[in-house]
Amino acid sequence: MDIQQAIESIDIDIDSIADSAIKAIITKLLNIIELLSRDNKQLREENQKLRDENNRLKGEKGKPDIRKQTQGNQDFSSEKERKQKNTLKKKRLKKKNRILVNSTEICRIEKDRLPSDAIFKGYQSVVVQDIAIKPDNIEFKKEIHYSPSLKQTFIASLPAGYQGEFGPNIKALIMDMHHSSKVTESAIHRFLQNHGVVISPATVSRIITDGQEDFHREKNEIVQAGLVSSTYQQMDDTGARVNGKNWYTHILCNQFYTAYFTRPSKDRLTIIDILTQGEMTFQFNELTYALMGQMHLSNKMLSALKQRDLKEVMNRQEVDAFLSEIFPYPKKYQTNRRIILEASAIVAYQQLPNAIKLLLTDDAPQFRQITELLALCWIHDGRHYKKLAPVIKLHRKQLKDFLDKYWVYYHQLLDYKQLPTATLAQSLADEFDVLFSTETGYDQLDERIEKTKVKKDSLLLVLKYPDIPLHNNASELGARTQARYRDISFHTINEKGTKAKDTFMTIVETAKKVAVNTYQYFYDRISRKCKMPSLASLIKSRSGNMTYNTG
Image (cartoon, rainbow, N blue to C red; front, side, top):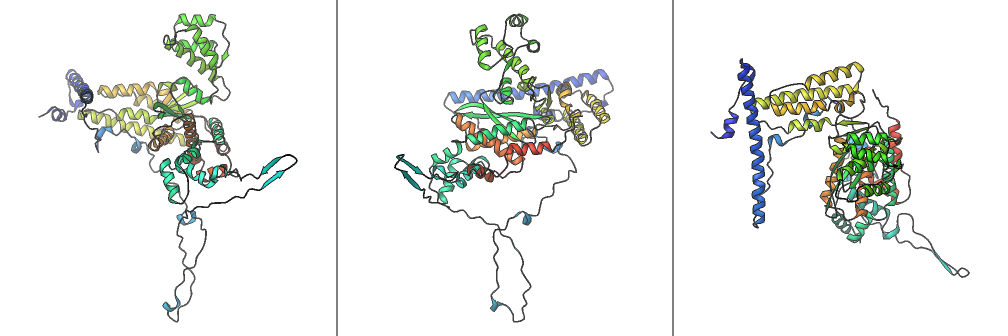
């Protein structure tokens, strides 16, 4: 019998043991087995990595990375558990009622196929969808006039959207295919060539990235409208590549919009810079010094700062100059520099009249202390339990039993959001204390339960603000858009391409939330017709019609 089989054969009912001393010893031994099993697994993985690296240095190949079809505990998703039961599905219009009929044709029966007594009884309607893809090339004849007195030639202008040899339909199609449908530039080029459009790959790329100032302004307006559209904001980040270097794409969103910002870092200063839309300032006052103390800046440094006659509000250039003066060696005192920058930026942000009060995120450290309130995601917390991989049957049962109670409580919170009351809020808060004071005897599970209990205030903000979601899935779904973009464009090359990517992902994802056809929107803006309302105005109108219950 090997070790794995021996462990699997351990099937004990710990509660049936009457002797408390023996019960405690067996409980401890089972936990020791769990720890040794976990350490053994980690050592095996580390050993394999070292072997692979050794083989690589010798010019050989390491162990192939073959993903297993089923990996048991490797599925950390909580999709099944978190879905509300008996949720009524939204009714959709019948397919026929959603199809616009462009023309009607009569299908006739040949007369010689009909018997002599056949009587006409009307028509049976059948709607067939089709699409026509063909060039629509226009030759514009621009009038030319010459003024002898002024010695000047006057030439008529092309209609809006037709500059650059390609019309607004092609430009809107290219942008919609690339940003909304995630089609590669080379595939777009082949598609256009196959349908008779004479265009170069470089031109396709330029249409996607160049001359997009109006759309960049629209993105800024979307963010401005989005930041004041609800009682909360959600944030997350995911990896991005810019000119071969690892950057991060930050996602800022709520139910009305999703915005993207690709930056080289994901620290607190980056988050504040995004929330202030590049207008970050730094404030030095008693609140700042108190926060610096909480962030463990030394008393000696705090005293030195207080003795200086500092300008109360500084911009980034001013504060960098000040820090260079007191820390002349950039590689030294990095922690002190970071604390001073972060604390002064946080206090300055929180003094802004439009500073957001509540941020919903995962438990990443860069989101802490920026806003007055930080709500945490229940799905992220539940994922930690899913990552436990007990090898003892008893521990697997204890984990399953606790997770069953965990998700029952989660659904009680969902029900509370529908009909919140002060009495029910207090009852759920008390129930949280009971549930997360559970002691199972499985040490790793008990440690995880204790960590959840410490986060009570952030996990139960929903009791005071019932409108906030219980999870951060909205920003995670937004992160998937960036991940899908990496599939078609491994990295952006320069600032122009990166900015265009962020802008159009913002427009496309926001358009989905406010039910706007992106192709029509791109065409409307490129052609300068501007008949469609801006996405920012739609955010304002929709959020203005919402009633928030703040407890």
